[in-house]
Image 1 (cartoon, rainbow, N blue to C red):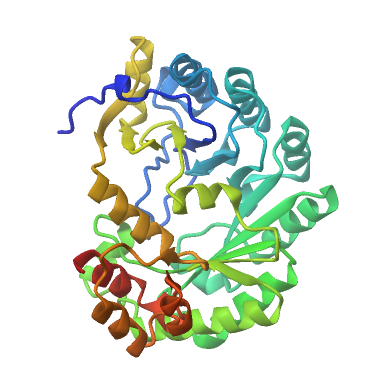
Image 2: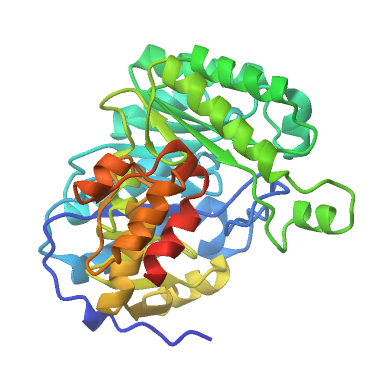
Length: 388
């Protein structure tokens, strides 16, 4: 079991940080999901969905004593779970507590939302509260693929929520998943075409991964569902890159494309190893090379707060070498890539160029930038640099 983390390691002040808020509730747990989510909305007391906003606010206010006098957060992101299972007034209350404690966010404020979980009135209330961006979990345009993924929305509901967001002048993103059992190449192309026609500023496309302990993981293990074929996943990634590029989207991270200027500011904070503080059960934080995380279960998390204690379950201070490795692992996924790490043997760079994993001209100028083939084999590039 991880040792309790000592907040005395956080010395501050820090010029820039982001906030993540984890809402752990879902109406249905998708078969592929291994996130810290729960379909029980009534654990009792402050762990229940009906009182969860006040619980999160308590943690935020406690953190204010540690983080002050920091600058206001740059970005705020509500994830889960399904944040919009809570009433819009609750999400507004949490965002208000963040602004009251640290200052109003200076950049984007995003919440994830399943298409069936919000109305136009909800979007308007959240916009009035300060939310500027929505990330809609579309996943697929094909009903039979949605069924395999245990998604409960219909394609028509995606049309509705994106249309409302556009009418209100809100920025929005749609998330897609490719590689589900039974999804043909035509199915995937249809999903791409439909997503592009919705005119989001940002599109994420993630290859399905089978995680141990999930419902789908058990189905694959028992032979009830086939494991995704890596070659088919690669083909679908190339289809996505072709379709999105042709529609004016630019890839800026391996699984993310955006119209110019509409990249996710919050996710960039993760990929550039910036500072962020996570609130909620199981939420992770990273502050100046110290990484820590909250207790996962809502009851245990709430219990710590009730006792006036931070709900931190563990943490670690990263060494210089660990920080360097993380900078490689995260930065290599971005379009701009990274500077060639110090003391990387020239033969390693030459091998990556020869295998067409990195741009040769950029590498000779001192920067490692993935080719499209390199994006498909990013882990291979990372290992080569770590082991150099």
